[in-house]
Length: 456
Ligand SMILES: Cc1cc2nc3c(=O)[nH]c(=O)nc-3n(C[C@H](O)[C@H](O)[C@H](O)COP(=O)(O)OP(=O)(O)OC[C@H]3O[C@@H](n4cnc5c(N)ncnc54)[C@H](O)[C@@H]3O)c2cc1C
Image (cartoon, rainbow, N blue to C red; front, top):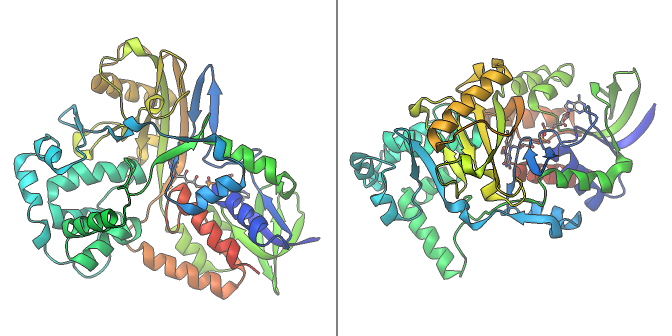
């Protein structure tokens, strides 16, 4: 039986960035990463077909996390970084069947038809909203309390389904958008907090946030996000074994015994589990039933990504922008669509366009049962209606994620406390991934950094 200082299970961005930070900060430790699949990347993948470049899952990250940028630099990827085009600030929300531009300034907001006049009027009462009830409040309840039901339905629910594939009335505000809660705590009003923050940024000479959110600009790599994974592979090949699923994990004294399908085992002092939480739950069941049960409670929303390629002559509506989101109230079969070839260059051949449409989410678990044909006809019908598309797409790629995005449901913070307590009790066992403290690539990198630098 061989012995290692650190074993990392899982070769998605979380496991790979943990490996990277260990090599950079703890180079004296002997590290091995085991990936079940024959390829690395987890949900990150890019297919390059006939001039199209299709991302399987994520299509970018916000350039606001220094650790991600530092990692890219250390991997020699700075020259390959691709910032989204300026037009990504054009974003749309579907309302009464038509696309409404998301206004980026208060005067434009007042003139837009994204909310009705009573809905806009209700916003004025934000500074005197009722105070927060006890306990973990849902995103929907928070927004309804502060700026009204219509804003919750037409501004926030679509944003929540676009980011989390989630339902705003089920997700915890404190776990999904802690900054909003902090703003309320500190200033007593979101508007007051926004004004104070804008003044502070101006005084410090800082620019405001990009169109992708506060302080972040959507960024990828030339040719698609998989470039990042290819680079990890080039750098760390000698530390990685693919096609080798970890089947069991047990504690033996100060060590862990990691078991593989062929009956072989390996001992390690430290163990980092970066597979999705529902799979971590299975391997830790014997070591800690409480940890296993808590991890099993983290629900995942299914997401299907339907990528379609068309000739530009088939599209009647302008698709100069980021794309559109669909409020649940509109009762469509899709969550929204990203206009990939408008956002990044070289995602479609000259004269063609690529759209990535999302189906599913926590409000539509049945969508995973759809056949490819059913999924495609649902997407084509909505896209034809909303964008005025005529004819058939010339290119179709479908990527299905039955466990797409973890949901930070009400009570998530308490679950995380239990997870931390149980991990500590076992000792030298770590988890990293998108199911714990944030679902984005930056969150995964940040958590992996924390884990890697805490090892000895
Ligand atoms: C459709 C979609 C779109 C998204 N868009 C964005 C976006 O634009 N921007 C963004 O920041 N985030 C986005 N996300 C979220 C982001 O993709 C994830 O947070 C991130 O990729 C998760 O990485 P991970 O390494 O934690 O998990 P995963 O990518 O799931 O990797 C886990 C790895 O563990 C391996 N594994 C499982 N079991 C075992 C085992 N027993 N032994 C060994 N290996 C095992 C798996 O094969 C897999 O490779 C998106 C997610 C989805 C699904």
